[in-house]
Image (cartoon, rainbow, N blue to C red):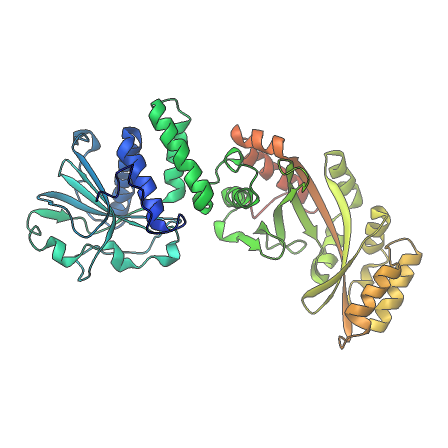
Length: 438
């Protein structure tokens, strides 16, 4: 049975299984000449780059010299189907770039090839699909020794693989889909393939445009990661805050540790969400001490005029655990206290002393330490074995971008530079440069 017969669906495994993804993808290549040509071009470009990086001199067949009319595509096959000559190329499709050296050579194993594409019997691609790169076993990229025994003298096995990213493939398909070059049948095929990805493998999407994220929190979240990786000096500085579900750039600054993008959804109106650019200054005692030396309240009010929201955000912690937060109803009074006579109180207290300080700050209108907060203090400190309390008079600033505005800016290629510009603007209250951005 031909598993790529469109009318014979592959029903042996669940829709979420990688074999169904492979079949869907190969069907697009089978029925869309545009998709096949652009995929082959991507395979060759990545292969050539890998050969160049490793000083391997191989003559790769030019795409213009190939006859794509004589094209055979298979999935889930156990042999190379009557290959008689030409180049044999190993292709891995996964979710991230792999830079490690992988030598392709005949390997003694019983292979089942996820995909097999033969072009005019001059080039054969044998494909391994791994949606999660952590599941890649290098041996799976090698052809089975027994499959090459009879043709080893007439087939050229390329010694390095072509390693492709699903996000790039989907990006290429999206570009084709929007370029008005596809036939009507191809448009329908691409649309069905995108729906398949969105439903069963959304994590593979390129996240290169909010308009593709369809108001889905998970997809928008990944797009924010993609944005931060585009503007950060080093993509390894982009980290994930699991408890609060947001990505941030690790700043390595004394006053603030994170430059954050947070997504806020309206539960009653799922299509109405926003992206907040947020800095949490002074979240720890060392940060707070440095922040209140570096910042001036006039700089904060200047940010307010530009659409930023400012907010006091005092927290009490024990060792490294933040245990409660206390608000203020007067941000200016709060800031000027810690910036002035309160500097010496940014320290560690015995818990009995801390209770008295908080009551005094409440009386002066600097914080709101009401009955609810007094009870919370008892639960977190008074009635526990924790002997001390750290007081961290944090201060946050945030700039909001509505879903409509963010999507429109992203569609026009303006969102990334806009976010970078706003991050620099927000940091200007403590310094003129932004060392963690490109």
